[in-house]
Structure formats: C-alpha cells, structure tokens
Length: 383
Ligand code: PLP
Image 1 (cartoon, protein in one colour):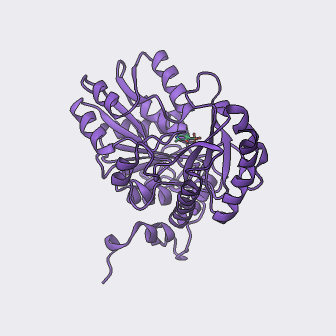
Image 2 (spheres, protein in one colour):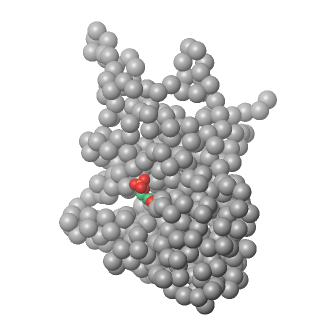
Image 3 (cartoon, rainbow, N blue to C red):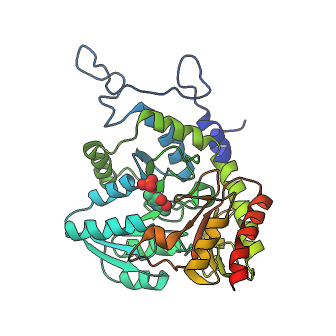
C-alpha cells in the first residue's frame, strides 16, 4: 500500500497533508480564531494550548506542512519574513559574531547592520563563496545565506557554506524565499534553519504578509526563537494563517509554471540588442549556474533581472511602457511584477542602476515576452 512517506511534496501540499481535523472531516481546515483555551477543573490544559500568542492552532496546518516540505523538525510562522529573521537575531547571545552577505534582500541587510550596531553584535559581510570561506576562518555564531540572492541572483553553495559554518562553530540560516522548497531544500544540504518570507511564493497571491522558520532540530536555540516569537509578540493573525495555508495548496503548480516561464523569458532575451545582460541562474552565462544546477532541484526559480542598455533613464523608460507586468515591489505572486530596483532600495544601494527586477507570474509566457519586447523598443530606439 502507498505509504504517506512515499508521497511527493506536491501531493502533500495539494492536500494540505490530507488531515481531517474535525468530526466533520473537513477537506480544508477551519479558521481557529480563539485567543485563549479553557482549563480543566484541576487547572490542566486538556487542549494542550493556553494562549494564542504562544501557540495558536491556527498555525498548525501551515507549520506542519512546511516542516514536512523542508524536512525539518519544527516550524514557526511569524507576522512577516522580517519578524522571522528578527527572531533569529533575538535568539543570539550578546557579543555574537554574524557573517552575512553584501548582496541580499536590502531591508534585511539594513536592519542587520543597524541591529548589530545597536546590540553590539559583530557583523562581517561577504561577497561570494571565497570571501565567505575567508570570513569563516575565525569563529562565528551565525552565518546568513540568501540564494539565489536579490537582485542579481548570485548563488551560494549551501553545502559548502554549511561545512564552513559548522567548522567555525556557527549555525547556518538560509533565506530560501526565492527558490522555495519546490527548488531547494537547504536543511537537506546541511543548513540549520531555513527562513521564508511567506508573503511571497508560499502564499502566492499578494494578500498576506507572513514569515516562517523551519529548523533542523528542536534544540535550545530553537526554544529561544520560539520565546522571541511568543514574548516579542510578532504573531500572525488566524485569517492570515488560513490564507497562507490555502496558498500553499497550489505552491507546486504555481511555482513550476512561473519558473518555466521565467526560464523561457530569460532565454528569449539573453542576446537582446536593448539589453546589456540577463541575470538568471538557469542561464549557463550566469556565474552561479554550475552551483545552482547542483543544488536546485528541477528548476531555477521565477526571478530574473534585465540590465538595460542606456542606463538608468532607459531602464525607467522600459518600466513606464509595460502593459502586462505590474509596476510594484515584492515578488512570488501569480501576477508578474517589474521594478527599477536601485531606486526602490535608495541611497547606498549596490544594485546596478540599469537593472530591472522581474518577478514572473503565471500569465501566458508569450504575452509576457510580447509585453517586454514592446517596452524594450524605447531602449532600442535610444541606443
Ligand atoms: N527575504 C527576501 C528574499 C525578501 O524578498 C523579503 C521581502 O521582500 C523578505 C525576506 C522580507 O519579508 P517580509 O516582507 O515578509 O517581511
């Protein structure tokens, strides 16, 4: 007989693990709105819960599923991806040393710099695998990796980073928002904690802000993270948790469709006269392609960037001309988004000024190609 362990992650996600949580054998879980739970006469908690800020049943379906998809021991939902990342920082001890990338989600990098300065944590930034290895010649407590990383989609070798981090005495946390568990499973590659902005692909419909951490083990560090969530109070509302759970049901077809489209768009525009470069880990021309091909399973994600010939003015002119791509920040939803990333990141950005970041959705690929072709005519005309 087919065992639960034999089922593919796509099947588990589509059926939300197939659990029937109430006497009605619901096909989808109810929304658990209760903030508090009744004690028995002897003061015990027969339902196993005391207060929703500590552990709400509203989180169970998504936490259990994500734990399974990432092959972890424990998962925790948060009110945002930033809240999830902050809980990891709050679990560190005074004087801890963090090694993090120069190129990563810019708001998290800015927050890391500010937080570490205010809380007297040591922060060392690296660019590329060799600098990471050099930084980890000395002891560290936490290594942060984002791969493929915003907005140039640089790829970090997770297995190598894990070996180096552990040799330096550090835990490895991987922000896997962009590849999702569909394409990369960092815990299997040696990471200790995987983090997602669930606002993106996991929910997938631009209508929930959420975050999640999944840990390889329920150790003391994880207990401190859970305390940071419960005491810090950055918890998700029950309706948002329910929406996230609903989004997770279609994670695999959404992400696979979007990634196949992104790969076709990247190949189509790779040698386009209006572009200086197409940055996509699935292209053999991308510096991280070989590592990505090794550590990503079945696809390279749905994020890519175009560097427009003619610099910032030409790039901005292209965003003004698109009709199907929506001019908005964020990523990972069913609708395709485009943004001039350097101006969104603002002063101090490391993003090239000619770069347009594309989050490819699930629209018809040819429509997206035609949209970019007609928008790029402004850059071609100016060249
Ligand atoms: N990590 C990555 C890669 C992101 O793109 C984002 C948001 O854009 C975050 C973390 C932060 O997540 P949130 O916006 O859910 O707080």
